Length: 62
Image 1 (cartoon, rainbow, N blue to C red):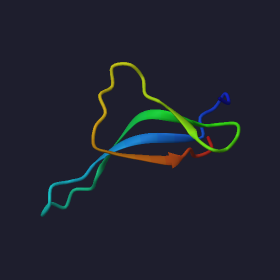
Image 2 (image 1 turned 30 degrees about the vertical axis):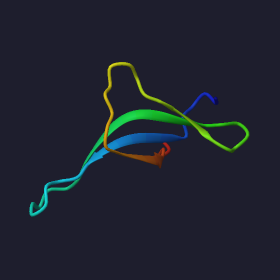
Image 3 (image 1 turned 90 degrees about the vertical axis):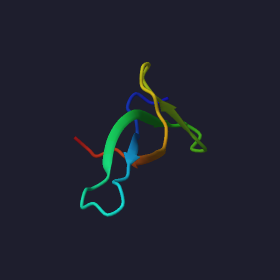
Image 4 (image 1 turned 135 degrees about the horizontal axis):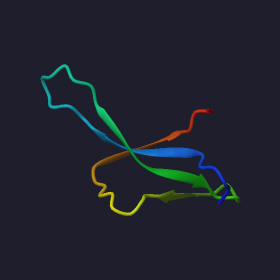
């Protein structure tokens, strides 16, 4: 793995139908691309329970 993650993993909770609310995005992990370019490692810290829709997006430059 490289030293910096390339993507961030979020659990997305959709609002109930009929409400004006937006989806809630909760960061749950970091993703590193494999050196050979054929896969990824998703690292979720201990103590985080994950279920539902997971979205992975490229990290924004700081």
